[in-house]
Length: 207
Image 1 (cartoon, rainbow, N blue to C red):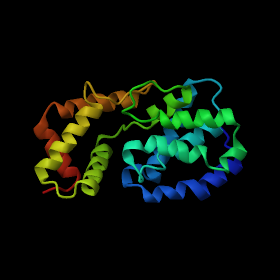
Image 2: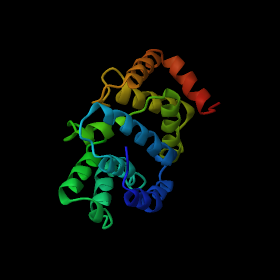
Image 3: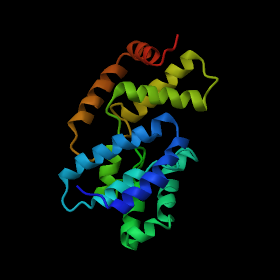
């Protein structure tokens, strides 16, 4: 797969550095993780434009630090109104990219409108329990700093169950054995709240 050098150069110089503003769960490390999974999943589709896919992954969480609750819409707008991107993509391609970014969120109530949306949405899912629980704790510390130990555990348990439990809202649209194993293991952990609490506290050095 080959990415247009000018697109890659611009994104690396002007877009990716902005992820320094995000929390650790939506940092450059996360973008690298999503990019790798996007390219891996693209093999399950035909006629994927890698310039488009790379750009979607690069922009998908860029506005997370501004407003988590609406970050998918803000990130899509950030891309769509980027003047430099207008030089690289046609109007139709820009709409496709914008929609895919809007559609990536796990809690979305509708199926992504394109293969690109399905790829980025699936690539954005966690596959590492330890990493997910650390990210959850980082978010809690930032946004709920006055939580007691028990409140942090309860919040983490509820969030994990709501997102990845048996009836969790996180959807997946790509064949991904790694994710299937993750869901199986995280539901096993959720089945014993005491074990969940111990793991959460040990991972995050909570005494």
